[in-house]
Length: 177
Image (cartoon, rainbow, N blue to C red; front, side):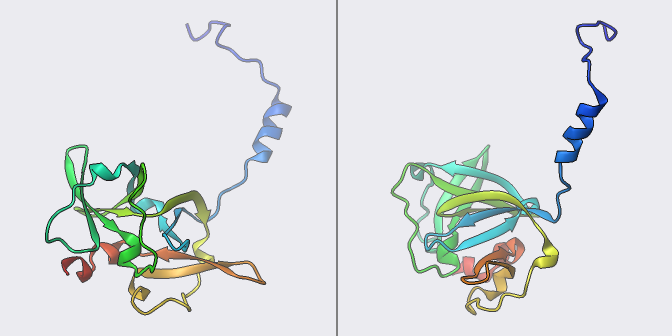
């Protein structure tokens, strides 16, 4: 069956060389870029993310007497997980719009802890070079423990992409209030 001529493809070695030359080596680590309601952009390492989903607001069950940072819980394939408003957690002045068809939720995990982070919108997956990560200089004190650093792009009006520390977010004492 393997020797069947229908399965064999006639390829020219010169064509293969030109194909391989267009593939570039990826540098850095894979990250997910996303936005908070204030349009501030952040990133999380892909290795920290268990799942990214679009969640209808009526599928997030509010829990009475829970922290105001928590929107409620969802059922993720039989596992109940908390969904938090990441913008509120980080002190974003703009409120997350929950009056829409779907809310983007990033499920992050560390060991046995899993938490859904509700955000305004998803960006792209991107390979970012950790060597270019700078110390975050203009970060407000209340979010400094959750920011590992920032990438700065542009000269005239620099834009910052801040890298969040998912472990610091998951282990924060702020969830208990």
